[in-house]
Length: 442
Ligand SMILES: [Zn+2]
Image (cartoon, rainbow, N blue to C red; front, top):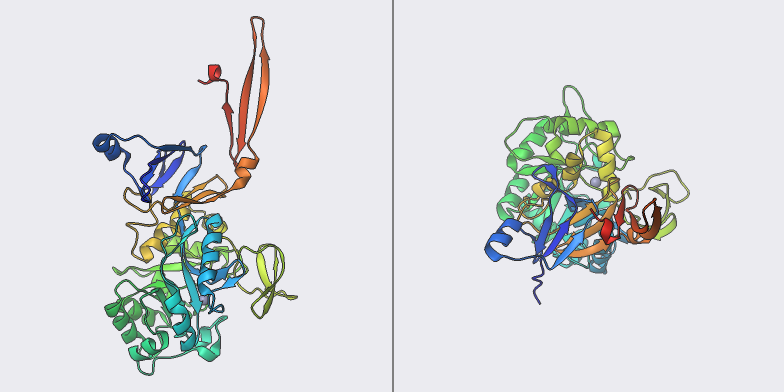
């Protein structure tokens, strides 16, 4: 049955048009409504009013690079990858993520032919975040900048575009594709992919390319850089590498992923990228399967991993094995690393990834007509609630836990009376008092 209920979120602030405004948010049928149109043309009142207790409503976060989480690894759980995506979609809403791209690292053609048909796009809703398509990271990357990718499966383009088609098979579920542009024939491949799949975004990454090759890739249609700073040539004053691209004035769209987890990219590097091109910054978690798991030792596939102090290590060592920082924590760290405004930090997690995928009309925004994918946050950027497609997918139960009532007796020479207060504590910051005595409500 179609959900025609009108819900109004009141007593809140909204991020809209690059500013935080004190307005209500209205939704119906999974979309954000214009209350004025509703009032004047339909003469409708809300069916439900939700008191947000002063929370900030932001567009939901969109993670363009996530390898797994909650014990699941998308690349290595070939048979059960759909269930794995379901588990992660359900888990990440607690981090404010309303849409993501399951990311598959460099694999064999057999793996792609098993996994890719199963990773269909999903709408999202009560059951969790939306899936906007797959991010294929490799195998067409540089062996010199392979990072944690398996060298045995890396490939070049001996037959150009044909090699790419033979490797991946059908690509209708793919949203983002990371490759190294210096591989012979790569520039022609970028042009051909963009011709056949207009909506597919090409990213350059895990690359040994100099700045000129990077620029040529942008000219051919690449429009994203995968985890800037990680797995690429470092800045040199005569060849600034891909960081030089960030500083280049071009009429082509260009955004870049950053992993502000406090470990994989130094805060000063994040700050440099932000100073050079704030509108290009896209926060990604690049999270691994240990995301969302409690502290302790976990067996993940063939690996044993220790989770401690917000980081994941190869068991018994000090070697980091991937990021496990929840998305809202990355937004917080991005803000403190760059010293940017709250609006800029939230947009780097919502509007900028949406723009990267060219879906900013529907996602990454609270504009009228956009998808009702949004989050309620407190001052500390803790997630209070997450809504996906107009459905509540997550509620932080700590808020209810901290709600309690108490009474105060007042006495003066003329009379005495009792006021009953309700105190609600939104974890980490806001305390709101409600006087429940109807005579004393202002
Ligand atoms: Zn990578």
